[in-house]
Image 1: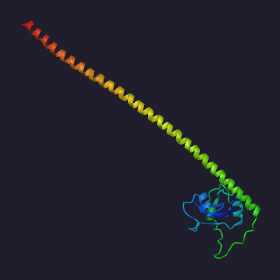
Image 2: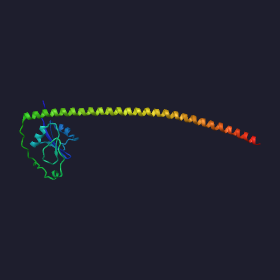
Image 3: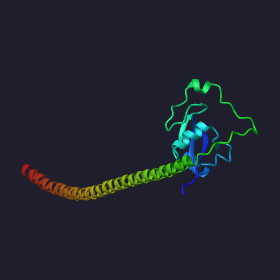
Length: 200
């Protein structure tokens, strides 16, 4: 059986938020709250019939309106303007005064609860799809990294092999150059000796 929904309100940044949810915990999760805003006095159950009607029409969906305004709650509200921020604040209820009791429409509440569960399933499916796409992207990135690392290691090994061959060639060339210098020194010495003898 679908859980009965209540409408909860809070403010975050530039927006007032409202949601129809089965519990305060569900509302906090939908708002992405890191702490219990209800215990801290920053969130409460909605009492305004228009807010309740708007949230019950889209259960499980976080609705917004510019902070401090009395405009209707929507899925994607505009940022508040300077004029709306300068406008007179909404009337606050006097302490101890209770709002008029809501009239209950059991059929509408059941429909809203079913819509909430459908929205919750749809959100879970969207999250699962996004997580699967993110996992595929990570796997693709990891494969690209592994391929690039393998290419780098292969090129590095090839470079070292070529550098070793060049170093050996240089060493052999140096040995040949030194041997040639030695051969030339001995030959020159002998030929210069012959030239001196010929001149005497």
